[in-house]
Image (tube, rainbow, N blue to C red; front, side):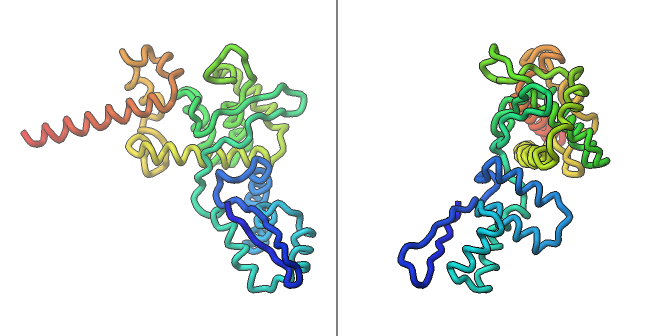
Length: 267
């Protein structure tokens, strides 16, 4: 967090404004507001000014009043606008901000934990496919499907995940309900997914190709089949296992294979 001190020349007591300094320090409200601005077709300077108002958490008329009252000059503006720089840099948003959503005339749906720590490989494979399809087509239904994968009705009997188990056959129906959410909320969830996904691809670069960020050339089915066995059980059991447990094991498989190939070349 950054703290801005504003002091009137004729007053002794300054005013302090606390401003987020990273994606994870945004509140859920600020994330939604920032997503709305970033997703709009605005000139760069206007976008940065609107984002500044989001970060200082004051409406434009209050910011104008602050500017007048504390007699700030034009030289102060570049420094203040620089506080928005992190929003134009790499998205490292790994704290899941929007814990639940309630589409119109639909039950409350609950999202994943921070860093997607409770997501399964099956769940991730469907979400990742919808995400890549959205990037390629800009079809909002694909974005709705991504959100429908991540947000599901709550259940009381699961200690490790408050959401009901992922069922791909319920996906389309829930995606149509997700479409009732406001665009800024859906866009904010997309930014949250991008931040978490970037963290995962950085953690496992040997699994995700550098060319398009996807898994191996055979897709996620290849990861599931090659990982299934004694450790994780059948193909279906492997798909329902925790994503990170699968990726760590698959990474070890890749490294063992690379080491074996090195040893063979030495012979």
